[in-house]
Image (cartoon, rainbow, N blue to C red; front, side, top):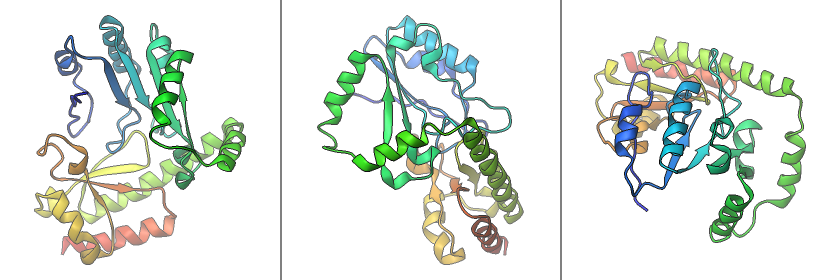
Length: 253
């Protein structure tokens, strides 16, 4: 298969739907989506998802959608599963993960939802990728999925507060901050420091400040699109976030 990327660009990171349409050819078989989106924190709107769904139906495409941050949306942004839109139920593979929703990433337990024949195809492929998953953890996650809505509401509210805590600290330290609508990541820009290479910046950051971050450039096919972007995470204790932003203020001097 040949992967054809659609670049998301700062500051909004919204998909260019005209560009997406132009990339679809008679050879196109599948659309791969991620919303809420890592690393940018962008959440596709219902209108955007509807337009993507219409393209999938028009061109008879399968859609594989990574929705592992489905419960982590903020400020009125709402995740709408594309499988729920007209004509999509029979052509969508929806993927999610307990690692994000229940904060147990190392367990590596997730799930796929699709029509029966598609699930059979997924299982056939997966048996050549991993032989077995962690059996005892699967029972634990089955219990977690029965938690009441109050759990998800509290989880979202707590991480929204941490997002704001880290975002304010990063702005105070001098970063340009792109406010995320979802996930637990914040993308920033390092040009206010006179920096132009996120990879080099992140390699030096532990020695300079004792803080670790990820260069967004590693996620891009277009090397110029994310060259000055750096990703931080806010799924940490409040005191860790406060200490990190305090250390990052050294960059201003």
